[in-house]
Picture 1 (cartoon, rainbow, N blue to C red):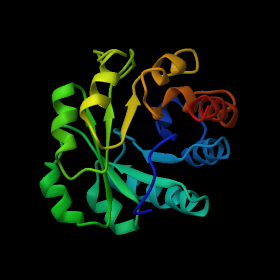
Picture 2 (picture 1 turned 30 degrees about the vertical axis):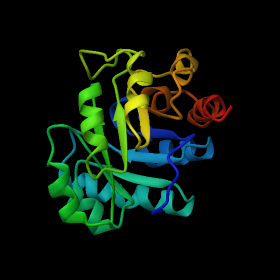
Picture 3 (picture 1 turned 120 degrees about the vertical axis):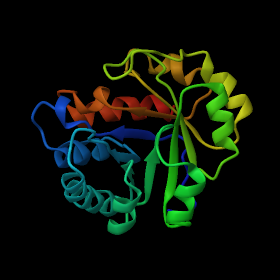
Length: 207
């Protein structure tokens, strides 16, 4: 996974609270069947122990299917279980310290919410950057808007993934900005047919 290609990927992030009582294992399996290429375990309200237990289960599924598995926030869990990477936010441990802890054992992703944050991240030792939220989401009370994508892509050399409120009815507008990969939560996790929802988004991405 060292030379993992981040282009043309659907990146699915878990959120069990909106999964209609279906397990993360079910969601991840179905999303992968639909073509998801990156899975992130993100359960903000869970205990660390519960996150670790879940991460072990999801990593097995991802490894079996040659899909990248990312743990949100917890570098130590990602290292301990042998995950492919960790995703960090702006208020988490500085990237320099994160890289010292994991050396080159983990892919590191970083959330950014402005052109300034994205260009700063591009100079740091991260492997990919997310930009968003592009549209309104339940979790964020602000948006960065669709027009930021082109501006970030002009300035940033590292892989960029758009995130935030992206669904089948607006993904084409996002892709038209030149972005190659999309991260989603509810568009897949809350779908009645998870596999079909992932497949529809993947088909738009790889057109």
